[in-house]
Amino acid sequence: MNNYALERLLPSQWEEYKAIRLQALQTNPETFGSTFVKEAAYTQDDWISLLENQSRAVFALYYSTSIIGLCGVAVKKEDRATAILFSAFIKIPFRGKGLSKMFYQKRIERARQQRCTSITVSHRKGNERSRAANQRFGFKFSCANEVTWPDGLQEDELIYELQLSP
Image 1 (cartoon, helix red, strand yellow):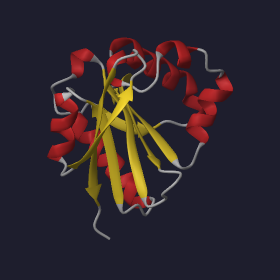
Image 2 (cartoon, one colour):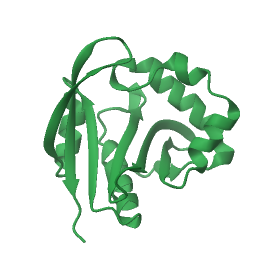
Image 3 (cartoon, one colour):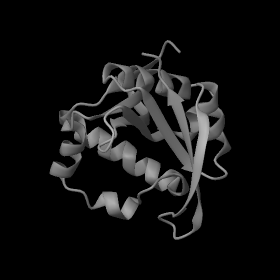
């Protein structure tokens, strides 16, 4: 893991964020709650404001100097004691190397810094990689909600929760 680094993106890095996020939406559109078409229309100000928002943190995964992944964590607006994990993506050639461990460690650390007492994460039914990754970190199944995904299909969103010790 020596050549890998996970760093919080700054507002000045909005172009890097935009590039990797749009690539994620093109590569695995079925796993996200948004679409390439929607986010490709975002303005520079939209991308910057997403990175300026202090209730959320977006991290870029680098291999040497190349960005190869992305993940985020946000404090839930309705419940400041709960953090939500979102936007996990790793480029295909780098998958299966255990790099998602870095994502979970960094985002759990951030939730603790924000004084959250629980963290939720969700995925579309059938996303076994996501389920396996979150359960390795102690997340427990909470509930399922039927949702209409951006591709128009109705399928369950499976929600998991992790209780943080004070």
